[in-house]
Length: 191
Image (cartoon, rainbow, N blue to C red; front, side, top):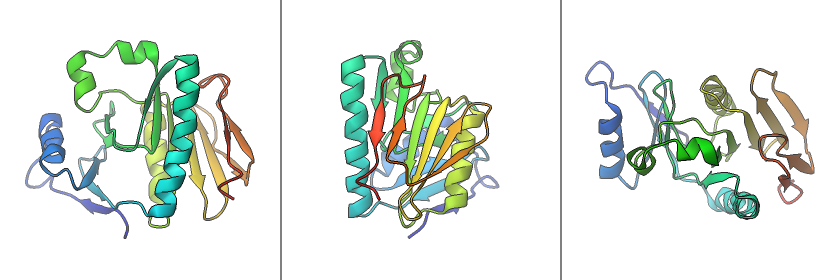
């Protein structure tokens, strides 16, 4: 099963509050929305991808608890990006000062902010070009560092602000650079 795009723009252009309510009214459906206002219905992950997601997310949570530099988010969190898109990365992290600048109301709904870091883990149902476009969307909205991990072809694409995408073949470890200081992710269990 792959993601399905639905364009309702000729009928209705959902406001941020309407999109939020649509998601609340349909908790069994994972929606995203691109900058053009198209709804994207995301399929659930399978067992292998779900396990990989939680293993990876745990490393981020442990690092963040130790450093207390920011806030971690799981794949259920939807961010309202500056371009109007609403996206849910598999793992996201926002620097503490930027998160603290949001109001309690903004934090409660879909936070109107682009994460400093995102990780997308490809599942067998994901399309590479669509996921790469999603990563570019994050970059266009202020992302500082992003990792697109593709277990199927054993590659990692690294996205950095104002730099070309770097592609690594079967890396053993990824490092958080200046965005996630001191963080490293061991990927040997993926390959």
